[in-house]
Image (cartoon, rainbow, N blue to C red; front, side, top):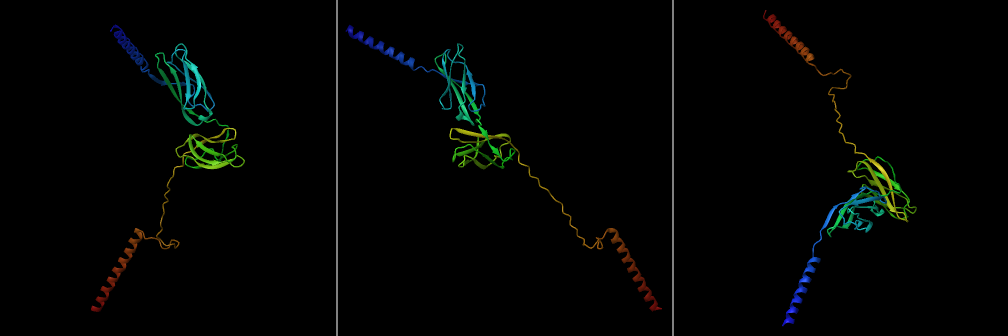
Amino acid sequence: MKTRRMGVAAVVLMACTLLLTMRAYAQDYPVTTGTLTVSDSSPTAGDTITASGGGCAPGGTVTITIDGLGTVATATADASGDFNAAMVVPLTTGNSTVVVDATCGTASGGSQVLSATLNVQPLVTGALAARTNAPTAGGVITVSGGGCAPGEPVSIEADGTLLGSTTSDVNGDFITTVTVPPTLSGSVLMIASCDSGSGTQVLGVTLTVQAPASSTTTTTATTTNTGNNDGGQNLALTGRTIWATTAVASALGLAGIVLILIGRRTRND
């Protein structure tokens, strides 16, 4: 009987130990978020920038990643939990917006993710020729370049917007026309990217996009001459001319009446 009681007590003790262990492992460790500080938020692809932050466990490892491209840098938090990490902006991120994350453990046993957004500019490796450097918004512009591998697709973009595409010829050259978006204005970087056979080539040109000329309506007044083209001999009657004509007609009428009366009186006599 005593042995049986000892066995039951041992089972209860083991169950309590297991329950406490499971609760310890099931404890939720918070994941905090914050802002990552970067030395340049608009870098050019291939540039080296610095990412910094704090709140990490002292001596802990900080991992820097970019939008699914894997780890681009690591750092070790100092005694205050702060860190600084130098990182190279991948060339494949050119002309795009990417998010940089810095992940580390915290002193409380949790973890934190600090984030920053980069507007990555393309690495221009050559000049793109444009028929005009001051096109009108909504107008058509001719661009050309070379250095592509033969038969490769060429993409033409401006401010991250795809304007058109073409294919390089047997010499790796290309020429095409694209429409400048009506929403663009001022200084705009237009690029053409293609495969050079040894990597991506980006040709660029800076344009100064002009606003379209405002349309104006010109109204021309037309004067109609109702008179005859007779050298001025048949002029329109004026008020003065009408008065004189009326006076002459009245005088002639009065003279006629007087002559009639005189004629009647002569016959009566």
